[in-house]
Image 1: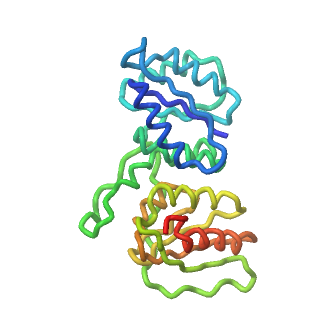
Image 2 (image 1 turned 30 degrees about the vertical axis):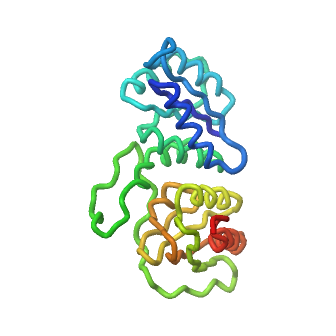
Image 3 (image 1 turned 30 degrees about the horizontal axis):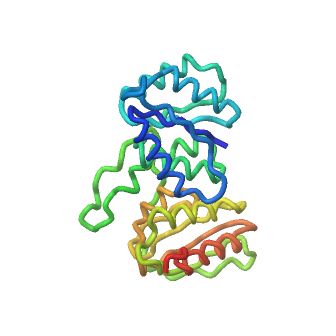
Length: 256
């Protein structure tokens, strides 16, 4: 599993960001270390960051999340000071959103590249979803945000393949707040247990398809109550995967 080092000028800020991310985890959480504050005050310490990286030497890789520019400089120095050899990436994504998105993706078994891309594109979920906001510049980051655009709204649902290789189903969002952070993280967890990655398309607003294992892509759909979502999966696990996601959505994620 991928580990995380959270680098902040403020220890309370770092702990709060980690606590928020952990609220979205359903099952085993990835290992997280905090390297925050310097000499009991504000600032960052390259030696402390290096020690945190070394403490995660048995992971498959480490993603470093930083709050301010000087934290990046300290993290770069820490890479020269560390003794461990596992791959490490310093994320250029937003601090709080990147931590939540990256940690959720890591909990489902994502690779370092998967987790880094999810954290880097985390601002996509904060873009307004109203009609008047279309055409705005996409968020910047070190990797492209997960695709959550496209799809033609209102198209009739195609029949499932008789071989069972492709399964599609349309379901209606029933929980009052729609596909916000907690339901999105529940979908990510459910989508990780199959040999296929289902996709979700919002037929009501025309956004998608979004991979069901990406919290950021799901949030970027902007799906609210009464929106119709099309679930699609391919492969031998397609029917089971679609059934599992449909059950969660139709149950309102326990929020109805």
